[in-house]
Image 1 (cartoon, helix red, strand yellow):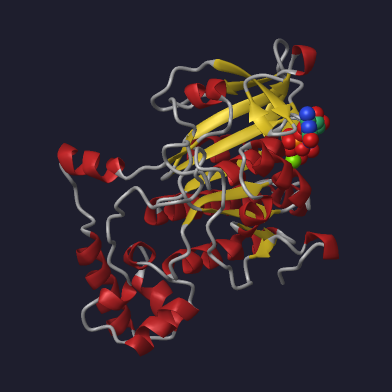
Image 2 (cartoon, helix red, strand yellow):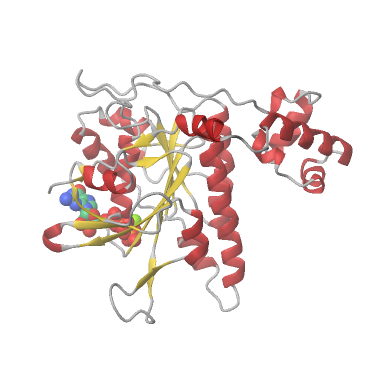
Length: 356
Ligand code: GTP
Ligand code: MG
């Protein structure tokens, strides 16, 4: 299912490939992906479940369940059907997962501790980082960028994929990025330019980006399971990009009367993304197109595809647009803990920056 786009693009790793975890070599001052700064909380996995043997784990994984959270929230019937196990076994497994996941109320201190291992990835622009709270996009959250074609959504995605590999001191998460490309716009050459822009080895940077072309919305959905699996197998993935989040859904469900189906599917996808963000402690960046909204008389008459479904599920929502003298503006919309505001940035050869 996953293809390499053309022979010239062989440098990019593909999700299905064995990925070589090599460090990116950069000059002493700018270390990239050097060390793992944050002590990850060790989360129990399926094999830790009492009374569940390797055979049962294999059945769960075959049904697309790789972590305890996915298991804990499943209805018994869904699990027994999906994994081909008896209802009694399914109930036992789900109960055990719920107990282990401590799906209860936690006090404020516990909650703060959970937030403590959140990681951040700089966009490359201090202005945009500030808009998002100071350090860029964050893990356990979905950041959505929407805007017209050419507004810089993909350029920001590419920049983030490079910057994710920077050390924590340098504004990265010292990890790999996954790029789900629905439109064939991933450009290895641009990644190389941006890698050079931060003084990193372009080939190494490309190796740390796992690219998969999603051919339709079902494939796009399927790839999320693959990411959970990679994380579970120890791939240090810190960023997941979906570019574009909505294009397939939009074209496949374009008929009259299909809107409800599309929204329902998108809704489920957003929830799966959020679950991935939280269970794997990864940052998620999604891009979204706009459609013109003739009902709006003043200002920019554009609305994001997927409407409230996508909007409410995204933790941070930025509207990107072109502005004067080659500049671009990012506007934060309806953030839970940030004032709405705007930031000016530029798309440069070296990536997203404050200045041209
Ligand atoms: P759609 O996917 O079509 O909806 O658009 P998008 O928002 O993803 O746009 P994208 O991020 O691809 O932005 C494309 C724009 O980025 C171009 O029109 C250029 O203005 C700018 N750009 C792309 N590559 C470069 C580059 O190498 N140098 C500079 N300076 N600008 C670039
Ligand atoms: Mg794009």
